[in-house]
Image (cartoon, rainbow, N blue to C red; front, top):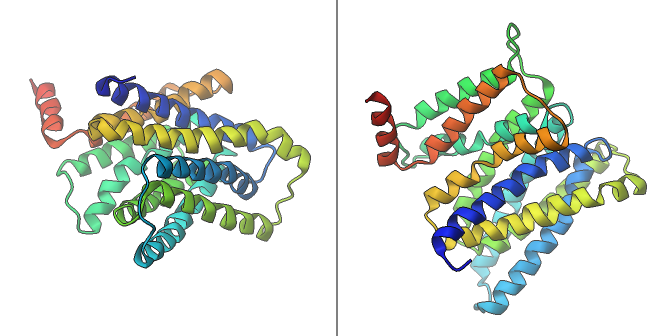
Length: 305
């Protein structure tokens, strides 16, 4: 796959498929392992896979040893990013226990819209049209999660909604620290923090994990840990190396679409017409929010004509 244009399309699509399908494996694990236990165990192969990737990259492209300042930045970044990632993955797993993989995929991708909103609050520049996309996302969330007359989240949907905010904080933290330290090292460090904090959570909440349950979930743990985190992260890096970041991010946002497709095929999940309409609105918000300002205006003017 030497053609960069082909690579920037195929690799993000594969990554989106991997990430979308991981919602199914998380759903399958929910009946066997507690949330904290699952995330502690899944993060072990994830951290090891990323550590292996880091060693391979170091071998190919040797670099000088970390300075004392870089080590401190890596430690702080790993702790802060790891804390928010721990919060996000555990809220997500709590939610998946009582909602569908498809809905979880779509609600989670709200972070793509929330990141620019919080960036504005932190004083960063963002597109003027951001608030329009937020309205699209909120409308989609309403149709996806609210039943006709009742204005309330199910508990699972609410946990997933909260996890989108946790992932938003994690992404903003990564954006801050990745300018100071190696991205793969930072990712490896944050997964190490997830292992520790999730293990503490499992002990604190008295989760009972049997060897039989772990054996049953080994394929799911390896898939989410190695394939989703290790392979997915690697493919994303390769795709972004030569590709247009807008195109790559647009294709990665299809993660939610693949979550619905995989949920329907593997778990036989079905949504109502109202929920599918909500998915369409949220997908529109996610895709439009990733378009450059000029492209977004062109789309809007095209609709007017």
